[in-house]
Length: 398
Image (tube, rainbow, N blue to C red; front, top):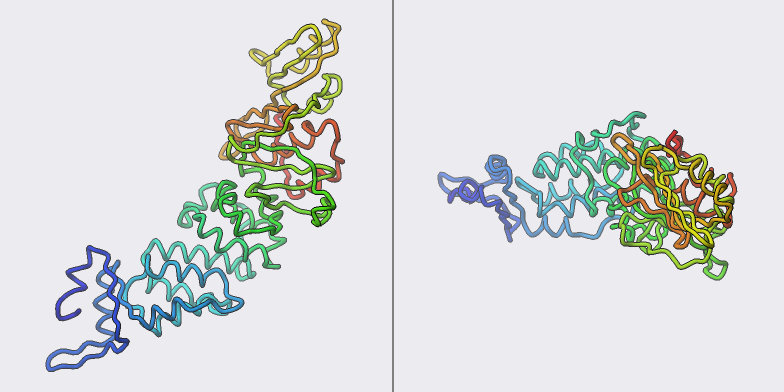
């Protein structure tokens, strides 16, 4: 390779040069080929990978028990992002980097063995592993652009590799700042994509730390699990995934969320509240629109000039002297980041749905479902507090 200038001639083609013979030393008159000379040559071509069958076998070996998520990511990036000379000795270092005791020296090995984009991915994962193990602390305040400054957002494959492990680490479980930091590197749509990897794991710590910034489009109120399902009691279940969608149980209800506006069509229901029965539940919100349906007439009230049509609805209901039912109404809530602009949430009682076509935070949708959609079987205040837990902001507009 050195004599034929292969490394130099092929450098623009992102080559992978694989030696079948692990012996990399050749000595002839006027010419010596050694690992050091190969390493020196390959460093001049930043995208060239030189390795051998023995190193490849070492990388492909089954992971050790207790390995952190770094091990799988090292293996996944070996052929895609490896560079320079990775012989058996270097492969051993990379594989051992998946162990907890090797976090400190990982980055030096990674920088010498991977391209910059792969280094960013592995460095970011190493930092997260370190934080979860209590090696580093996460700053309490994180700007919205911190994730980009740290090398961009996590891909679905990275989240699937690291999140199940992180959720099992005791040191990270109660660290809300850690979960807030982690939540800035991906969103609920990515979490839905990798939900199979999470199984039935409790994701409460992650959701509660990010419910005021993560956005969904629909929330559906259904029945909680029944005893026949052999599941843990609903009151003791945390946030989790069912059928690829985020859910929790509260009281007799299960609430399910989706980031896809086409999912969660809801169910046909005859339960539609009377205006007098639902008014107290919506008076804490800005009422954007309401559809009053009586026996002889129906009235649609929209906020064209007024910020809140609550008093208008009261006036119509009183002046027409008729009992009105409310099949649908619209609430104005805080939206997601960066500036938490207002967002409309349509409450469709007949379908047991809260729908935000432009998206609303998980926190806002949770409030809307537990306080308004559940009018026929209200959720106790202590149950609402348990579900929201770490949430500190109020998604309802003042």
